[in-house]
Amino acid sequence: MDYLILNAKIVNEGKVVESDLGIKGERIEKIGKDLQSVSAKKIINGTGKIIMPGAIDDQVHFREPGLTHKGNIYTESRAAVAGGVTSYMEMPNTYPPAFTQELLEEKYMIAAKNSLANYSFYLGTSNDNFEEVMKTNLENICGLKIFMGSSTGNLLVDNPVVLEKLFSSFPGLIATHCEHEPTIRKNSEVMKLKYGENVPIELHPLIRSEEACYLSSSFAIALAKKNGARLHVLHISTAKETELFEQNKNILDKKITAEACIHHLWFTDESYKTLGSKIKWNPAIKTKNDREQIWKALLEDRIDVIATDHAPHTIEEKTNSYFKAPSGGPLIQHSLIAMLEFYHEKKISLERIVEKMCHNPAKLFRIKERGFIREGYYADIALISLNNPWIINRSNILAKCGWSPFENKQFKSQVEWTFVSGNLVWADGQIHEGNGQRLKFAL
Image (cartoon, rainbow, N blue to C red; front, side):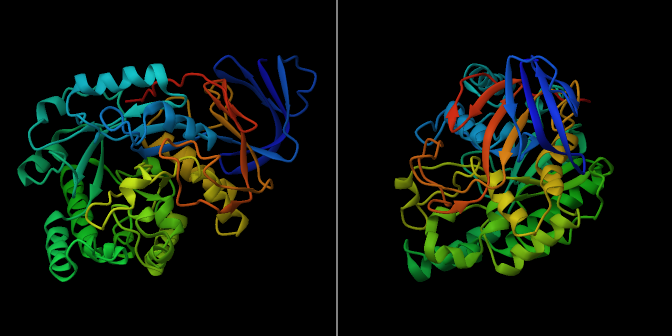
């Protein structure tokens, strides 16, 4: 073996089992008790720690190309592996937007050189790139991203004829950002007339309202049902939207799925008082009841996946007035430990965290040989201490923007070691350089 982890508890496929684990090359070579006699180049004492599959984040914005003052594939993938996230799927709203297969492949070339985590990139859609969309090789690309709500440039797809054509023709997974743009514009104008540029940040969830989210999500779901499309609705933010999704634990039986993000599970509109625009996301963080109902839907298997929507901006950008402050923030380094806080609060089990952050993304996107602790699978692994408290501060934040909405928060759990495709990339608070791999998908 290259690495042998002894006496840890493996959290995998609905069970927690004390076991040893051996890594050879890129793969998990052996799982079982009493592997102490097996020779290995490096032996790791896992006593008192858990092993879980590396998390798979199906929604991130790493800002490269074109917006690299905020972050880039190298810096944000470092933050990912420090947080036990071993694979990510990145969005097309870079500059230029990834509207063509050629532009998409340029991002893959950057990642091949610079990404510490495994990677895939969504192809973006506009009102006029249908031919490029239909060239997609579904074995090499995670899916198609449609902004059915406010975005920048030409990323907003609001032509009903184009949407119908995409939902009826694209054979792969369609991931959607759902907010109804006319409703948001109307709400924005009302607030601007009253407050000018200085709209109070706590009104963000009234501008990007429950109505705006529900109108768009329900429309997308109706389109998917009509055309038999595979639809994944990203970052559910309202109680009302959770009613749109069916309860089914077996994600493979679903054609319509949903995602919850860390910020919608953690914060409420009360949090704007202390954090302000640091927690300005689209869709907006809303009420305590919305948060409770998102949790309920998650635990009832109406919501299938937990992700981050990691979207860094500089702190200078975020401290602007309401309309000038961009939406989004850094979360990928702390997503897993944030969910482990909920485990400590007995809100969710370790097994369910692994299901929603590792197994289900692998199943939903049909990722080959990742997302599980299985012999022969790629060794994408996080070794975690559940009781090793630490405080997040600017000295230990790896995202390029250098801040976090969790600053000064103490977390009980730490990711101590992370392996990506058998490479040790994070250990004892230090990055060990390496390269992730391009994710491959089963048809």
